[in-house]
Image (cartoon, rainbow, N blue to C red; front, side, top):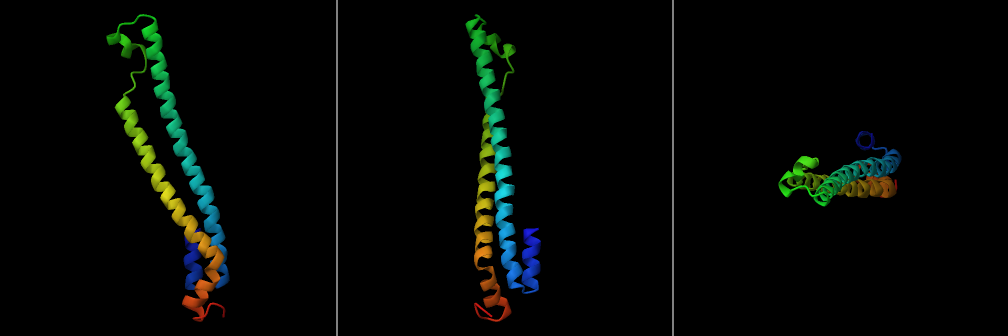
Length: 130
């Protein structure tokens, strides 16, 4: 909605509405990306809980005297390398979302604060204030 409104107000050279869409972009950045990062964090927590549970099962098996070669049969037999790749994927995803969030938040904040002046200077009348 922010992108469509921003383009539409640029095409119509409506400086006041262009500035108002900056507020929507800021809100979208905060709401959308906060939700995305929370989902990534829940995925990370799930992986950590899975690993901790596996360690707990293996520790209990060792305490009960289970031979080391039989321990994977006692638990989930989590593939630790796969879990590490999952962590890497979650980190990469979080980094991408964080970069996009900062970019959108910066652009939308400038649009919100100075959008009317920018449209006036570049499109409408060539002056900061028409």
